[in-house]
Length: 231
Image 1: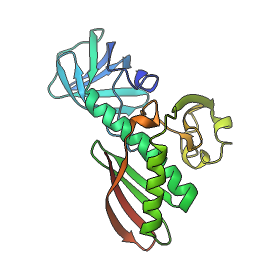
Image 2 (image 1 turned 60 degrees about the vertical axis):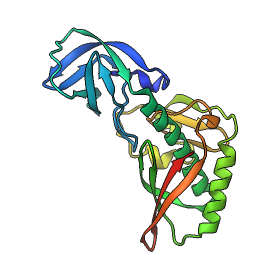
Image 3 (image 1 turned 90 degrees about the vertical axis):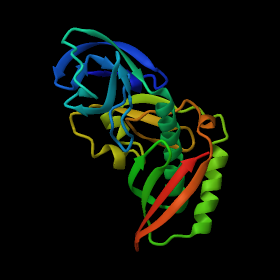
Image 4 (image 1 turned 180 degrees about the vertical axis):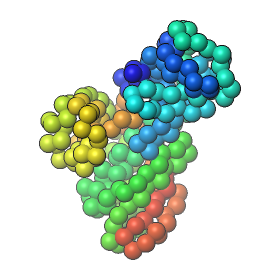
C-alpha cells in the first residue's frame, strides 16, 4: 500500500520515500506526494530523484509512478519526490471551482452532472437537463463568482462509510464506491457543497479566481456540455 500524503496536505511539494517495487519504467513507493489520476482530475507530473514522471495511476492500493526511461532504481532505495507545483496548483484551483459550479447548478437550476474532466486550462462538464436557459446559467455563474471572492475555508475530513452515506448529496457519489472502502474522505465547502471526494483542493475559495464560460455544446435534447476556465 502506498501512503497518499498529497490527500493530507495538498500544498506539500515534495517528500522522501522508499522504493518498494520496480517493474521496468514503473516505480511503486511506500509514500508519495504525487496525485494519481482519477475522479476527473489528471495525474501530477514531476520528478523522482532526477527521473521525469510522465504518468501516475493507482491500482490495488499501490500508486504506480511511470518514468520517461527506466530509472535503474532498486527496491529499498531512498528517493525524493517533487511535483510540478505550478501544474498542481492550477488543478487544485480548477477542482475547487468545479465543486462550486456543480453544487450551485444542481441546487439552483436542478442541473445534474453526468461527466467531467478537469484540466489546467479548462474543465469540461456534461449536464443532464431538459432545457437550457443561457441567461439563467450566466446569472448562476455570476453568483458562483461572488462566492469565489469570499474567504471560505475548504474542510477535508474522514467519516465512516455508513455515516457518510446518510448525508444528502453524498449518497449519489459515494454509493458507487467499493464496499471495501469503510472510511470516506469528505470535502466540504461550508454552505455550498459537501461530498465524498478523493482529489486535491485549495484551502480557501478566494484562491480560486473567477469562472469564465469558454464554450457550450448541445449534445442532445437532455445533454449539454460546458467548458470553463479561470481568470
